[in-house]
Length: 289
Image 1 (spheres, helix red, strand yellow):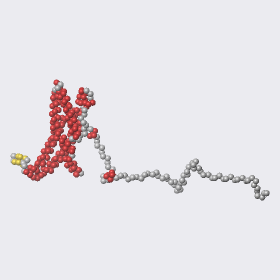
Image 2 (tube, one colour):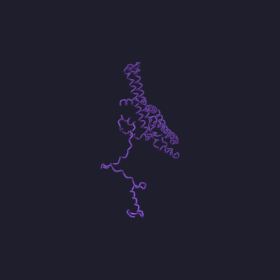
Image 3 (spheres, helix red, strand yellow):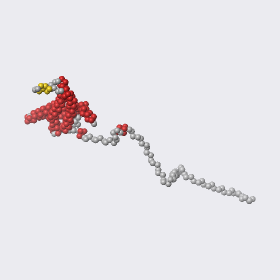
Image 4 (cartoon, one colour):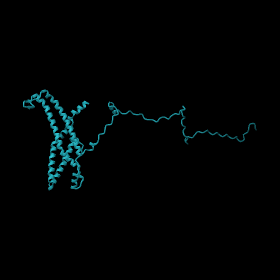
């Protein structure tokens, strides 16, 4: 169990998802700042100039831009955070006419959720940049302690003079820096998990993300015997024959059945007796002349 926990803790550095998440957090602040400035300025100018009809095309350009920004953010959340979200909806494709397309686009809830996500990107990016800068600075100073201790470099300057760390404190900074580095990657992954849930909430999670995972069926054999059972073929079973007929309880074997009487197998009968020949005419009895 300890080996598994240590493997998960130190194995975070070799997971591709970790560095994709770090890339997402690194891009979050500049993109969020750009979205906020562009959308707030465009919407303010467009709404202010609606009265002279100039603001209508400005609002249409801003609306098209925030749809493109939302589609780009969906791609980022899908491939960098691993979020299960559908592609950007196109509600206007099923409507007819210019007015119908505009009504379908602005009447869709996904349009306004995209706008809310883009405006909130600056807040999420601020948190991500704060975490990145804090962790990077902490790791840098921990790894700089042994250098300052060996070369006696003053890292703190006071009115009484400079201060450099002792050698034991400098050597202690190496494992401390590595520990902060791995713990910081886990912390960034945790914040990335929060960003993924926010993206799925705003963009709409697919049924794959909402479906619960089916529990694994319970094992019916011990773990040590499972490989043997899975690779051993079942023994062939002998063919089943019908049971012999039961004998009577008299102890005498039954007589075999007689063959049926058919025309080709007549029952033998006794041969008829031959008729006696009559006496010959003129025969004389003995003693006659």
